[in-house]
Amino acid sequence: MQALKRWKTHLSLFFLIVGPGIITANVDNDAGGIATYSVAGAKYGYTLLWVLLPTCFLLVLVQEMCCRMGVVTGKGLSGLIRERFGIGISFYLMIALVATNVGNVIADFAGVAAAGEIFGIPRYIAVPVGAFLLWHVVVKGSYRTVEKVFFVACVFYLTYLASGLLAKPDWHQALHYSVVPHMEWNKDSFYMVVGIVGTTIAPWMQFYQQASVVEKGIPLKHLRYSQLDTAVGAVVVTIVCYFIVLACAATLNREGITSIETAGDAAAALKPAAGQYCAGLFAFGLLTAGLFGAAILPISTATSVCEAMGWESGVDRKFTQAPHYYAIFTFILLIGAVVALVAGRRMLVPIMLLSQVINGVLLPVVMFFMLRITSDRSIMGEHANSRLFNIVAWTGAGITAAMSIILTVLTIFQ
Image (cartoon, rainbow, N blue to C red):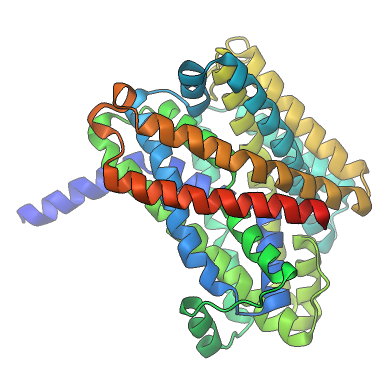
């Protein structure tokens, strides 16, 4: 009985703390992320599934530092960087973050437009209506309300699991390539591997999760529940990614359909290859992911910039209390929606690629700052990184940095 009561207590505390880790990880599956996994499945079949396991480990490693910093210090990442390294570095870091996040928001609204058109909703209706609903929920809601809406959105990612199952994959091949590394040693396949890692661990995630942990007010005594939230989020998002690759490998790759660039292309191509139900579920997931990402990324950007500049921020504050925060949020949301509406395909794809280049440059820089801060006992106290953690973390950071730099170089030259 005592053991059962303890488990009930632990579960209650976990569900009270849960949120920042799971939401942040799931938003990483935005339109750009779905496009990357779709292309991986369409072009390379099951052969790149093995990449997801080490990527999941790296994601846990990076995001755990964020939740630990947030709980221990009660401050956001950009605020800590400003205090530790100065306003000048923070200013240029924020310029890069804003640039890449604007590109990602444009990609998300492009995903909303593509998914809407698959369901017969013109983009000139789907995008403005979606943008207004997102603005209304964030500006008029509280943190609790916004978090509940985002939790509901997370549930809709299960449609990708259904799509993967409906595609009837070859499970023997899928499981084999999940654990046995296989890769063609050429520029295109290496570019794809680096792209999977780069799109799974994006710089905005570190800023958003830490800010969410701070805004939620998670006490230090509940740190382990926040760490568990982070680990669960990374595992869930990896499972979703796995089934996106499965769906496209089992249908598009099998049918020889490899010429896709966006998640909208994948959803449209699935209909003749796998049937309307599989394609419909995939497109519905894309619509949810696009809206989800288009809401979170402006919030993350506004929070990061305001923390770096010392301005008031947070969904719980009213417009009059945090004018800079809501102005930045509204501006990025508006820019993303407008560009996605008026830009042609020729313009959208380069914008998405440019945002990935900036992501590639920014990620190793952010990781460097994070590792320096989490190793500093004057900031983290007894919760600073251990020697073993630092060895593993710096190794992971070095690998991620190298891959991000390679991704940047390859993107520029391609």
